[in-house]
Image 1 (cartoon, rainbow, N blue to C red):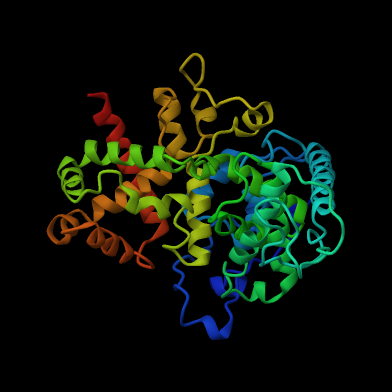
Image 2 (cartoon, rainbow, N blue to C red):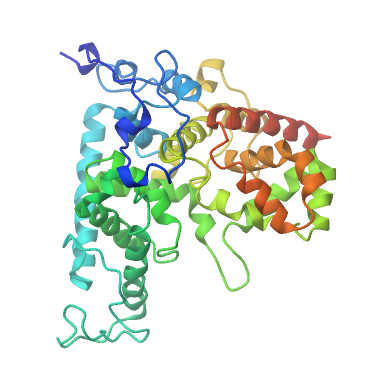
Length: 420
């Protein structure tokens, strides 16, 4: 019998039942607004019934429900793998099993290589002190420091120098959750980021990655599966972490944010410029870790899946596999049935044709937040510190669904204004 035919009771409890908070931290964490709701939230039962007998996923049906009320906590990990392009909705159960096993083997190879370079990887330990000097020499008092070592190449030195910084960040990420009282769970997060830092040598490890990776390691039990899910998330946002001595990675998004506000609310843009805030650096954190600090843990997960569902493109998997950009339909016309396989936000771009400077929903979400605070910013902001304070006041007051809906409206208005 297929799983979609079984009667599986749904638990529609409070967020804390799924992501327990340590008793001593309950007064410190943000309250959650999201609560899975029957008839709105994608339930386990509806999720399972959205697969055909062979395993093809009715992605349009799933997107409709996610965009309406998010994903039930018990199936978030599975749903996220599709939303992030890890799997093709057109694939079968067998296709995905083969791909999953192949990726798990690949991850073990990568992890073994990292373990050869530093045996802390996979040991269950989290490194929080430097293990080598800037010139690659072992630091006294660290494991294996007394052993003779070959001269390390620059890539290995760079990687080993990042290990303790990963550990320090792991040790302060989502520590209010009961989940991280288990040190093995912290080690899992550290291992995944240590391996990623080696795999993506151009970016390596940057602060903020723990905020993005932590929810995935909590939702997806298998470490290799969690790694590949995080790797696919990084494909979406790695540009944010690409920095040089003269620019920050998120600069292009901030530039587009400036252009959006200038178009939809020129008075506000002029006021922000008069405060020497024309580069919009005050929005850096929101974009860098996708509002993780502005929402509770449960609400940030809800916001993310709303964004991913609204930005979803059914060609995402094939684009990643072939390492080619997403393109608009060649003939510019698409049947309504096919169009519904795109998220609401992405659909607008498909209709008008993809452009080089395509903004993400996150940018329009920040823009809608700024426009929502228009009066207060114009009246009260006398300097950039005031802008930051006014934006900080939104913490724990934003409704994720409403914020996304406002961002969609702003996006539509921007596209119309940009035409004229």
